[in-house]
Amino acid sequence: MLIAVIAGCEIGFWIVLAAGLAARYPLRLRRTGAALLLCVPLVDLVLLAATAVDLRGGATAGTGHGLAAAYLGYSVAFGHSMVRWADERFAHRFAGGPPPRGKPKYGGARTRYEWREFGKATLATAIACGLLLAMIVLVDDPGRTEALSAWTARLGTVLAIWSIWPISHTLWPAKPKDREEDRVRRG
Image (cartoon, rainbow, N blue to C red):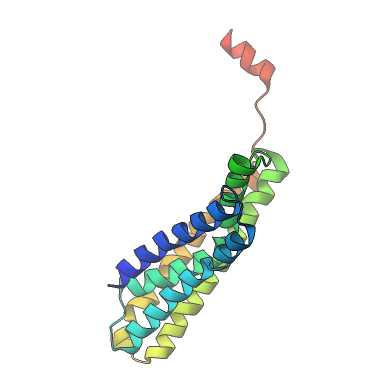
């Protein structure tokens, strides 16, 4: 059941976000749009409450509980930037705003971008692991929370793999291709 709640929360996140941005830009209801956008984090609270109720009700922690912690961690750490990403696109499309910014492609700007994203992933992992530990303490039964401990290792593995991008961009920063070099190759 918890997997369905997670899926519902993900769908709810995008519905509330789209409703807020639609009210803000095409409908020009700025206050309504702002109110709806402020409701986006409420979706996370629904998932947090459902997870706590499930565990307090005697459920043995499983994949759904670990996934809920991971979802909440990543939602908190990346939620603001996802809202900003969508807002830039809506503003451009419906309000004559500037074209959306993409991620930097080269040099120091790209390296800083990769480290900033890795910092968000580190925060997400810390939040998720904190939630996992809170669930373990809340249940206070190692037999019912065994699966949650495995999730901390999974999240650590994801973070270790994620570190490849900022490290590689630090050691070998991307450089723009030389247009003269491209013309020579094309012949």
